[in-house]
Length: 379
Image (cartoon, rainbow, N blue to C red; front, side):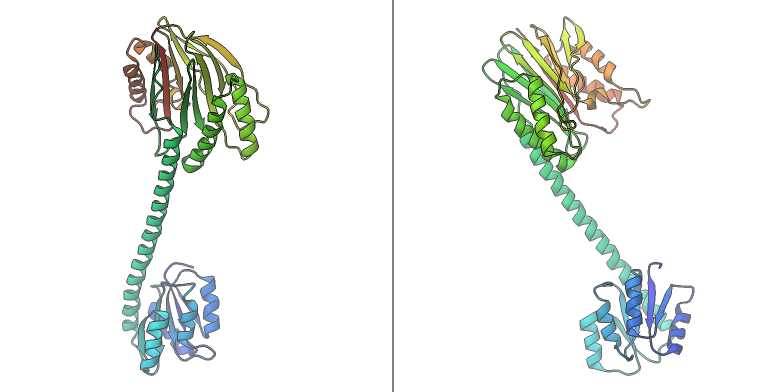
């Protein structure tokens, strides 16, 4: 049934016909001869905007009918037609069922039409305000959810890079939306530095919560002397057991001996890290399945050497998989950008990488988070 349907209830057929003629070709009209028939129509038609009811009907008065329709049609325009004037009935109608008008018979069709159209103006305004209120509540709830996710993410992400003798670090992190799915973390002790860069599946609060769980488990494993490959296997087993619904996180994890510069890398679904050595850019090709997808996954581990002057770059796929207007990936151009700026100081170096990436995408809205972590050995 169309919106703004008029329901007419009267036990006199002549009155029903007269009302129908008043609104013919203007609004859809439903008619009922009793209150029970009218209630059946109300339950079947949510688009009823106006109810015109005779007060004196067998079995149920007009006011009793209108009271029954309140839960189903709280904003409908209610009009009572009656053959006599009773102040007590009038007051009851106004107070108990939000009657818009109380019209005494005989009534004039143009006057009734004008009354209905004025009532519909109020009806439309109420509906618009209700829609606006619901939308406002929805947006407020969404804003609160986003703020919660931001708070979770602020807790997950380290506030600064560790300070190290003979080494320096820098991070460029740009979420595509209000809350990102990327995360990174560090752990440094007297001799060892551990770095993790990850990309959580999903968005907003679910991704933030999943990232928080992963971060907590990672912190517990940071202190264990397990190699990166075994840590990823242990984290994968824990996530598969706790989250069998398909949540996952791609992770690259490396551990570096700060005295010797020797490093070990394991990778579960992240882009291969880059290593700048003597002006050459090479890839550290360790592969593996993202964590949380497959039970019993094992992870390849490779060794590398970070000599004085070398720079290690770990990144999320929001960098390597960025697209230009023609649909070309940035992966190879990112390696070229690393080579061009490799002699810059580390803070300038990482800013230059991000700037050229944004130039490549022509400043388009980000489709994925961008995380770039760089570690340079100075001496």
